[in-house]
Amino acid sequence: MRRACHRASRATQSTAAPGRTAASTRRSLSRKDCAKAVAYALFRGAEYHEAALDINGPELMTISQFIENGNEATGNRVTYQEVTDEENYQIFDAMGVPRTTDGVFQKGSEAPFSSDGMVTFAQAIREGKMDKFTDDFKKLTGDDPITVKYMFEHSDEFQIGERHSKDK
Image 1: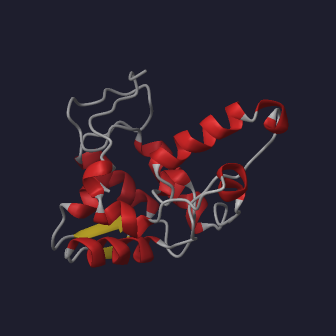
Image 2: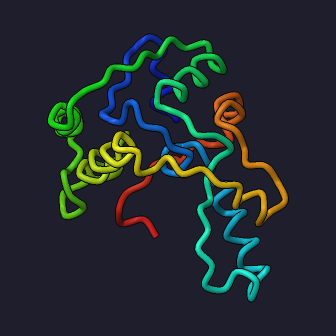
Image 3: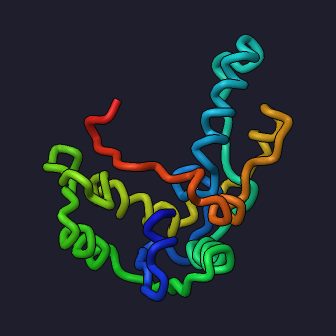
């Protein structure tokens, strides 16, 4: 979210269009809600022992819809540009992002992850493999998940800080 918020008039690029997702890794579900879901499942113990839940955000959205939410909440003018998988790798290569987790992660990188994971994640979104929507979060916690709009409107509460593969 930080990258989108600070790109006042730049384009963001991805290979994920036109796929939709409500998955936590697409920023549609807050980390706070992820933690809440885990806490509730652990507290309710036997009821969720060996259960498989699809915990996701309150809505399926495309990356264009995600950016639209961000622009509306922040006043930014971020646009979306679709790129090929190879162009996506080139973008990450130019940022110094290693292709695999065996690579060297740059201190303070705005992208503390491997590009293979990000490119294949975008492929999965594009191919519709992540467009499952459930209300498992609400069934588990009794609450609605936090919306993307709310996360942008209160972005200071949702920053992830510096993270690298060696974090614990």
